[in-house]
Length: 115
Length: 115
Image (cartoon, rainbow over all chains, first blue to last red; front, side, top):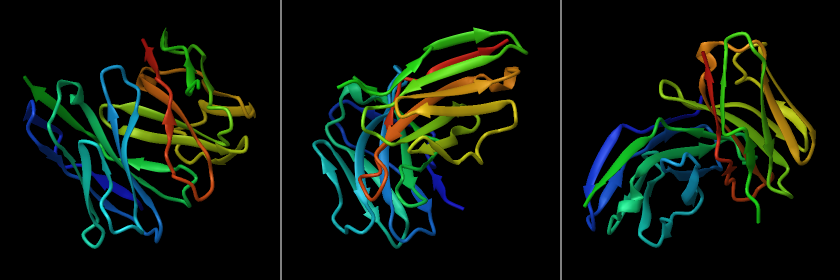
């Protein structure tokens, strides 16, 4: 069975500082994608960053980057220069079943940003 | 471009009543997903369709739940009869299938409260 584990229910960071959110996963897929989604209080899930498992290079999107350790099945998200607008729930997700878009999500990490 | 559109945004109903949630996927997307989000269980995949055909409904909790996709631009999730434990946020998401990015595009969700 595919699983995604986020071990940090809550995290806090000072504005302008850097924070890392952890995620581990387990999959039997040979080809898969990993994602971080952000869910602000408005509820809508927004894609933050995506990583193709076959790529060794870590994905980056502006202030967001990942540390993808395939052997360890680890996929952490680093947010640099944190902003108040980064405060949200963050969900790690792994695709399965042939990339139809089937995703399994972790339980989420609630990130607070202190001014 | 319009995103995934869900209605209603909020629904409050009494136990035993029928509830119908609606979703319009992004034009051109051929995969559609229904997820349920609760504090206890996080995000759970209920069912997904590919080219309007249900592919995997193993996540549907029980026979009280049913989903249809009569055409490429519309899907419904019905609960009949509803129970208090069905209270949750229900998300619809769409994507393009095949070996693409695997990214899901979510609607804003329908918050259901069953009294």
